[in-house]
Image (cartoon, rainbow, N blue to C red; front, side):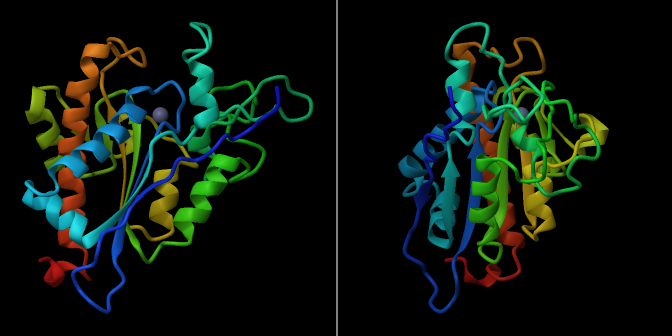
Length: 269
Ligand SMILES: [Zn+2]
């Protein structure tokens, strides 16, 4: 079975600009970079649905849609995601499904360790059978290449980069205690914000660190439910509440990134 990236489902929302002569800014959101984190792709779809349904009635969303374009990638690691649907033995697959390097028998690279951000240093493995295998070189994978090219060509445009994972209920780095608070308030599930070494563990080569390095000011990782009770096997009845929390967090994060963004403050309509 050869490696094939079936397709990238980029979903783009463009809306008419309200101010003339200025390049419109944008938000990037990707979900499902790690195959087994099923709540993430569910959230990207929820996010799009909510925006489409509420942009007329939710004043903040209305202003976001008027002032920003949205690039949403619901399943970034599509090969890995499809693999997790095969059976119970593949359900917890994390990496991509690229073929093994010479001399190894294991497939896949940890796409969230494959970006050009202190690549191959801490929190990674060079053993291709490891779950945190960072690949043979930075941006060696088709999936990370696609993101690096798309986002890298839009550094002047994208002001907010959100990559959605699970689990742990943490926001990295300081999305702002505001977002964690808002998310906690929705269903009284506790979310924390901080830097990876403080509240998770240190790692290199993540897309969020890379996005920050190339100059995207608001670059964050959201780790959604839960706190290891069910882990990646989050029960179906928790999908909706988890999405509701994440939506509240994404909404406030994007809002703050617009308000803080030097260029746009006076242009909000
Ligand atoms: Zn993850």
